[in-house]
Image (tube, rainbow, N blue to C red; front, side, top):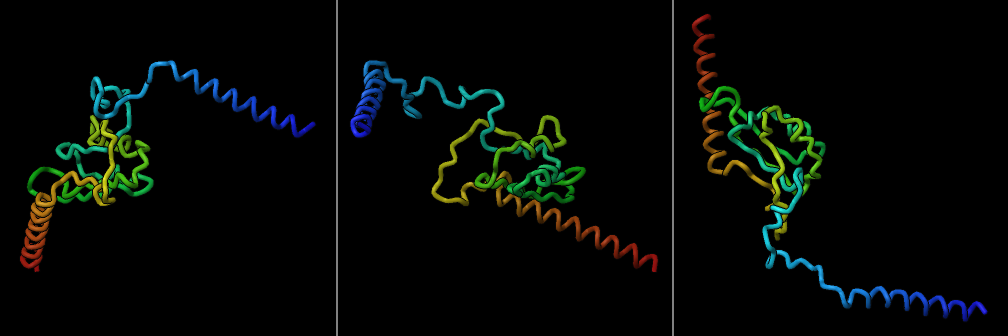
Length: 170
């Protein structure tokens, strides 16, 4: 008796599955032909507050490091130093490792500038053949060298002035 009951259960579940499958046979397809045949770019259809990849406005960044300290997995690496470019710290480099980022928004909340210098954009495609391509560098390497040289020159200038002042006192 149990043998025939198992055969009946198997046949009825196969029949139920085929009913569901055949019900979709006569419906219009709902497949979106991404990215080839979209009516408008997918980024425009994403909701407000969508967390894509992180971006940084290096012009408004104060190099305070709050975002770096707030990040629980250390995916943000930045360096600021005093230069003669502007009052306060000048951003030497700002790198974000998107491969490690968990999109928690803690770095955005920690930023003291209004609007925040670090923010999420609507970009979401991160496919690449190299993991190193997932380290976003917001200051170009040539500019990093220039800014670091300016910071080093200012530091040497201050050391010379301190030595001259100490020599004048002594």
